Length: 576
Image 1: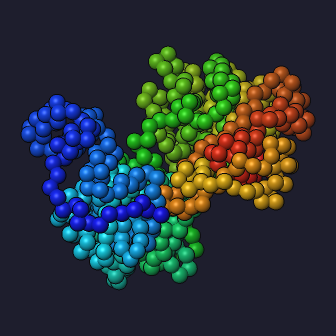
Image 2 (image 1 turned 180 degrees about the vertical axis):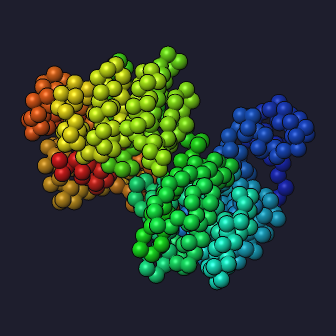
Image 3 (image 1 turned 135 degrees about the horizontal axis):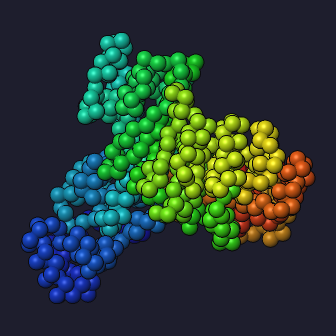
C-alpha cells in the first residue's frame, strides 16, 4: 500500500528551494551563497548544483520539500509501482514533467513528482491522466532510474513492426531499397525498429536478442539472466528486411542466404556504445538472427569479481602463475567461460609477459595483448594460428576453444615446452574434462604431463532483493537436499515473488559458481596409465565438499539464490 497521500492544492504555494533547505538545516547559509553564485554563472538549476557539489543528497532535498508541502516522500528504490497504472502517463511525458504514476487508491491516481511546486507540470499530468491525482515527492535521480526500468518499449516495437510491414507491401522494391540506406539513416522503419529493440533489450538487461522466423509469424525474444523471454510477434514478411539490414551494418554478404554467417557492429544506445556480435542461420522459414550484446562501458572482468571462494581463488591464482602447463575452463554455452578466461588474462598481463590469443570471435579488445581472429573461410584455423603463434615467442597463449584433436595436441605440446596455455572445453564437470581430451585422441602422456588445473562453472540467477520472501521447501526440494548430503535443515531459504524490478521473474542478475580440480601426482598417474574410470572416481573424491552443487546450496542458504535455482544450475553436474 502506498503511504498516505495529500491532495494537490497544498502544492500551490511559491517555494524558494534554497531558503527551504537552509530553514530545515539541510545546508548552511554559506553553502547556499556558494550554490547561488554557481547558478548565476552557469544558469543551471539550483537543486542540481547542490547535489553535484555534494552539499546535500537528492533524497535530502526531496524529503525537505515533502515536509514543507505536507506531502509523503516515496523512496522509489523500495516502492513497486503498479504496472497497469504506470501506462496512464506516456514515457515521454513522464520524463518531461518528472512524474510517474505509482498506484490507484480511493478512485484517484497516486503520482510521484520530483517538483510538485511546478504548477504547469501538475496541470499537464492531471490532463493526461484524466483522473483525480494525489501527489507524493520523489527524488529526481530515482525517478529517472524508475522510468528507465519501468517503461518498456513493447508498444513502440509492435507499432514499428506494423509500420515496416505496411512499408514492405511491395516487398521486392522496398527490400532492394534497403541496401541503399546509409549508416546515418534514422527515419526508415527498419532502422527505427532495430534501434528501439536495442534500447528495450538494454533496458531490461538482456544479453541476447533472438529474431526467429516461424511458420506464421516472426518471433522476437530476449535472453535475460540466462532465460529466454518473448518480446513480440510480428508479420513474417518483415523478417528478410531485418536480416538484410543487420547484414549490411555487419559487413556480411547480403546475397548469401543459404549458409550461416557471423559478423559484428557497434550501436549507440542512450549514450552507451554496445558491441553487437551477430550470427545468422538459414532455417525452414527464413534466416534466424541471434545478437549478443556486449556493453563497452561494463569494464573488464577481474579475478576478484568472478565470485570464487577465497581459498579457491588463491589456488587458481597460483596455477595461473606457473611457468607452463594447460589450464582449462569448462561448462556449457553461456556459463561465463570467456569471462573467466579474460579475467585470467588480465591477471597475467604485464609488460614482461607476451600473451597471444586465437579466438572466434574476439569478444573484448585487451590492451597489451596480441589477439587473432580465427577465420575458417581463408583457412586461418585455430590449429594454423596456434602453430604460427608459437614462433612469436609467447609466454602465455589463449586458445578460445579446443575444437578438434589437432588444435588440442598442438596446445598440449606448447604447454609441455614452456608455455602457459589457457583454453575451454564443453564438458559437464571438472573431473570428466581430462578424460574428454583422451576421447579426442590426445596421447595420455601429454594429458598427464600438461594439464595443471580445470575450472568448471555455471551461472545461477540471484533472487530479486525487492521481492524476496521466506520460502517453504517443497517435498522435491527436501529430497534433493537429502541426496546432496546436506543436513542443515529446511528453514532459512528464500524465493522471489516477482515484481516490476525483476520483470516478475523473481530473479535479478546472475553470479557464477565454480569447482577447481588440480591435477596432482596421483591423478596424473591415472591419466598416464589410461585409467579414465579410476581417474574420475579419484577426481570426484578430491572435490568432495567443493563441487558446483555444494556452492549452489551454500548460496541458497545464504539467501543469494533460491533452492529451485540451485537445483537448476547444478542439474548438469547431477548427470555426471
